[in-house]
Length: 341
Image (cartoon, rainbow, N blue to C red; front, side, top):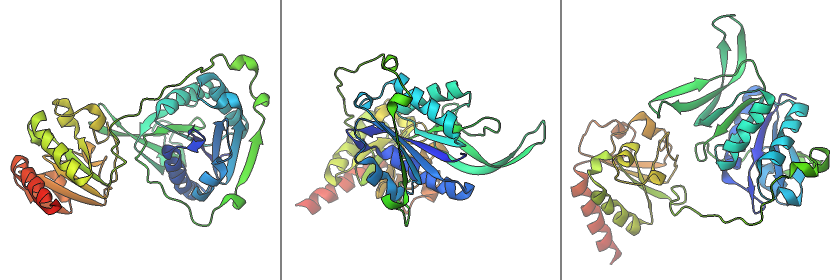
């Protein structure tokens, strides 16, 4: 009881990256809280789950295996999680802010009357004093997320209901294995699906599933070249695509550039977009508003190209090139083409 639970997303018998990120953060939070980390897997094949999650410090793994759980559907997954939480009474429950998590989280929180903070970009442990009752509580979950279109950052607490539930955006938590943990130190609980569900719970049968993968994956490349409003036009963004082709990089964009129509939304980086941690981040014509910095500030190395020497992003950058992007980028391209010959 009172442990931290992470719902594991599984596709083709593989635990997804967002779940491993949540386990990493969950382990960190558990150390502050002095509680255990528990994980939940619902799938048709649990053979790989234990060995995958054990290195992340999971103390207890709940497995539900049934061929009808191969693909996510709301009712069976939701009913299992609700009943498990009613029995185990976790103090915190974390899910990925994915298509699945954004459906499952509200179902579970509504059934348990627990509340839910969606699309969190950070989680911390802190204290809270009720301004009316003056009741003070230590070790509450601070659920931090952008609000009002990313213009402010809200810190939300849930002092009265359990579990404290949050969905967390993929990529915002750093994936890191724990030290000294393996499958032999983890308790595995095999649950009988029939104890939780009846045939009537499987109202929907997925006959065929077609998955359309995005052609843009900002987390798959070691180098990200991002353009901002300072690029001036969608045509100027073509320079970034050319440079990215030479470097084996992916092209991203700030929200201002996306709003201006210079780039598609699936390339947006920041609090209201994707969070990235590349080895090299090249910011082109990006001023560096806090909403954008939150999505790339953990890059290993940052190069800023900006005509404004006082642009906020320059304070974060490892190297600053002061100049117009439409003059600097073509020089980059020419040099790399020359070096490649």
